[in-house]
Image 1 (cartoon, one colour):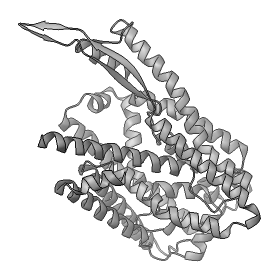
Image 2 (cartoon, helix red, strand yellow; image 1 turned 45 degrees about the horizontal axis):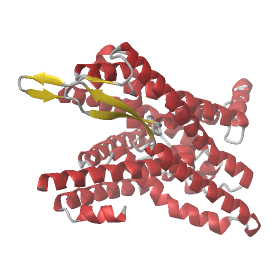
Image 3 (cartoon, one colour; image 1 turned 90 degrees about the vertical axis):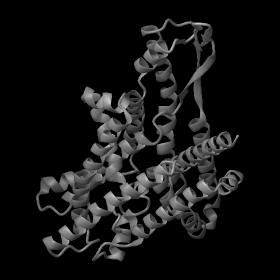
Image 4 (cartoon, helix red, strand yellow; image 1 turned 180 degrees about the vertical axis):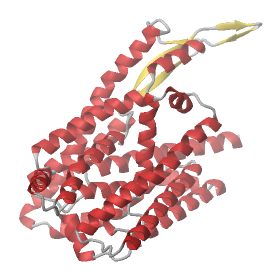
Length: 423
């Protein structure tokens, strides 16, 4: 990777793009350190230590949530908006056609819908979090004017970060949203390792070694699964046009084992956060029934087996769901048939569609089980080893490795393109 980075720096154009990405990420990190007005730091630390679920939410804000910064929500509203838009493509055929078969102008229109949806989502999420933090004494909101001021700051910061993410993506050296989340995890990584080494009792050193061994296994597993794919052979029939012969070549159709990436984990965490948030909202109620509900939801934490089983089940189901949304075997089979391509041993059309669907389901089953294990394994290790200071979990490792591999592939593609243009 270091050699690849040096090769990129030799190109003036690519060097400029890397500098632009670096400066944009610096702007985000500055925003992540500027706190909202009237934040009680001591109460904040107490709140985060007693609510581990918000530590996971902090991952998807790029580390901005733990500081209760102006970028409190990070780019999570835009991620939520993108997820909702993808779900709507299953309900409305016009959106599906716009997303899968639209021109560049029509795709830009689809993206504009996602941007506009980000604003009300940021308003709703920001209002909910501000009220929750106010009840817990983390942030002091003395008047409606204070609430409106903080809410406007949060919405503006979320939209601004969405714009920064798109500017990074335009550099064509990686996905902007992924790199923003990546930067937040990388910043905290050395501090959490040092904190774990310093605070762990020497008598529990074997537990710490076991914990880091599992983390290493997760990294190896993520690399293996992220790069794993099923290559389906595709042949093209020879076509005679005048005096020239076209086709006759053979290639392959790559189906990735993990087509969904980290999206299923984001879906699952979004749902699992609701019980904790409801518990926090109802804890201050005077109604005994509401207090019972708050207590019931409060017991629904990472230490319970119900939580672990539900977490694994949701990740498993959402992996299949997202793959079904993003992978369209009927469209692929139709495109192959139009171009004179076919899968050896299978008739073009419905037979090829069925084959692609069955193959995708088989490899997705393996990918879904893997993602589920990756999600719950760090929680299990924390329970067995007693090491809770190292907050970075399987989700964070999955994001780190996946984004790093994706960015490296994009950089290599840019270098190959430059060499091709020179030659």
